[in-house]
Length: 105
Image (spheres, rainbow, N blue to C red):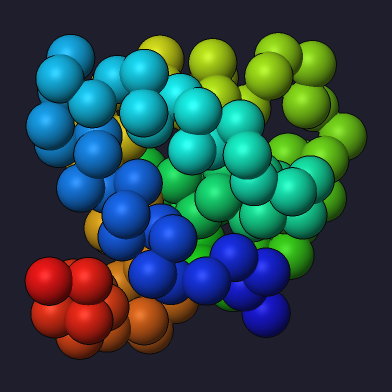
């Protein structure tokens, strides 16, 4: 089960796509997440980039907890294609990204 609201993930996707304009805001938004949300967000990005299969999500979350040595906001904002990875991760888990985007607009 995803322990971060899809709307928060979509917010991160939007901020990530804004590039340098929203970089500080994105960094602060991720930093403000709780520990569970950060681990699930990281696992979601990993599923989206193909490092884990959707059915391995629980294992990805456990790995995110175990290997969290860098602040999540630094790790994720340094990840190439963060927005695309998160969007693909949501879709792989069967979460309607378009519906979440409409709710934010």
